[in-house]
Length: 174
Length: 257
Image (cartoon, rainbow over all chains, first blue to last red; front, side):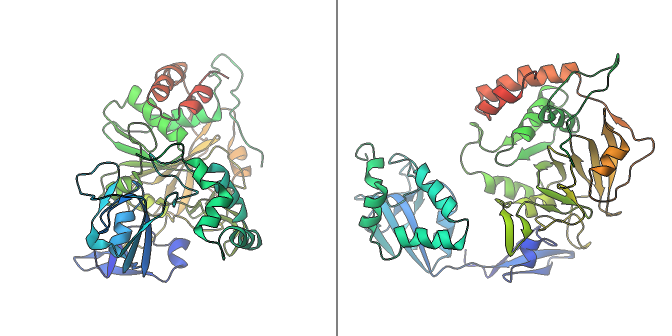
């Protein structure tokens, strides 16, 4: 959207509001009787979003959940990782949220790239791994151990071998 | 301190037995007004059942929005949120782990927010929808001093806000296994509207960690009737199972104990 901030109804008086410095209270310029929370725009330097399919120009079908398209439109650079690279994605393609190449900086072919979450039509979420992640994230030490084991200094191929990601794919994607 | 479950008084007028969940479902369903647009969030079996019970009884024209049901699968949190911000959501349900004397509620952490004893999922829209929906039904399946505390550990949503913050005028309603209470934003206090059969004003005071207004004598909540429980356990239960609205829960929770 490119707006500098956005007014929001609610949150005044909460500790969510009190503990953040990216929101403030201000008067509605069109209605002096009303005060709202103004939240400053969030503009990530880089967004990395996983798609079902993408083409080489950067048109893609994103997983259909969340706010991926809005995140892409707010970010300065957008990297699409995709289960499949195909010849051409158009807005008429079904099976995901279309995002145009206008918003996309780079495309990476990354099969099983959503692990441990899933991609409809490709593989389910890995519940065991998500449970492992959740229990590891209960304190800093166990989370550090999780990162050391799976993330820091590891390549994607090493990670996928460790979690047997490929075994989750029942059959070749269509 | 103990969890309270309704214990019908003995006598000729004894109400049919029901679970705490069924009690809350019936009591909240009665207060739904026909033609309201009503919604609940994720993992909201009790609110979902109460909306469907109202629709099956006195409020056949309500709009029922149940996240995660088969009719409304997918991520519709944003749709409900925007509906509420536009002022088009008449009724929303909230539970919380703590409620306090000032009408605040907590869905975020137990203990010091910077070093919490327990982290909870928080509330995506609780600090927003509780400001913009026209009416809020709070509910809790226990009435105890660990739930109703003098001051919440974290304010996820506030009841009392400066006058320039636009709020819906109607008081919050709070349903527990012991009583129905309302929070008057002007007075800044909870008041008991009625106490359920089997409990006294002293029970409510002893299990509430803050001072509240209780009329003397306190009105007795009309208990769930045989007819209400029958509709809940047949028509509503079947509909939840058929439509994929928390079917496993409906199958086990909505039946005679």
